[in-house]
Each structure stands twice: as C-alpha cells, then as structure tokens.
Amino acid sequence: MTETATTERPLLLAPPSGDDAVKIAVDNEFAKFKLDALGPMVVNSDGTLSRIANWVNMTPEEQARTLRVLSARNKIRLAGQQQKAQNTSESVTTENQ
Image (cartoon, rainbow, N blue to C red; front, side, top):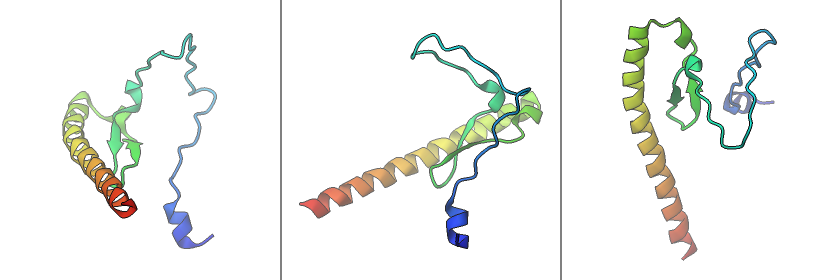
C-alpha cells in the first residue's frame, strides 16, 4: 500500500472491551438512544464525523463551552458541505444537458 492510500483511509475506533460495552435491548425499529457519554458529534472540514476523545474528562463548564463553539462550527461546516453538494449536482446537471 502506498503512503497516499494509507493516509486516505479513515481511522476507526477499537471496539469496546467486554467490560466497557453497554448492551441495549431494541424492541422496535423506531427506538431512540441518547449517547451523551460519548460527547457531541464533530463535523470535520472534509465532511466526516468524529467525536471529542476527552469529553468524559471535561468539567461541565468545559463541556458547555466546547458545545457552544462546536455547534457554531458544525453549522458552518454543514452549510459548506451542502453548498459543495449543490454545486456538484448543478455541474453534473449542466454537463448532461
């Protein structure tokens, strides 16, 4: 594998060990889960999603501040990704006409 191919592959989290795993019984397909302990989702500049690794170690004040900043940044990045997708679909439509 080349260096470029290695850097393009997303990094995956290791599965939790048996002691850390939380089992959730799902009764129906519409069940909702709240995963607050994992922290908020981060929209990266390339559109991928991640989480904050040290979320559980942050104080409530740090979490609130991080959530405020992250919310604003995620909105900007999501808008950029939507604009990029719209531009791509418009250029494909234009090329096909």
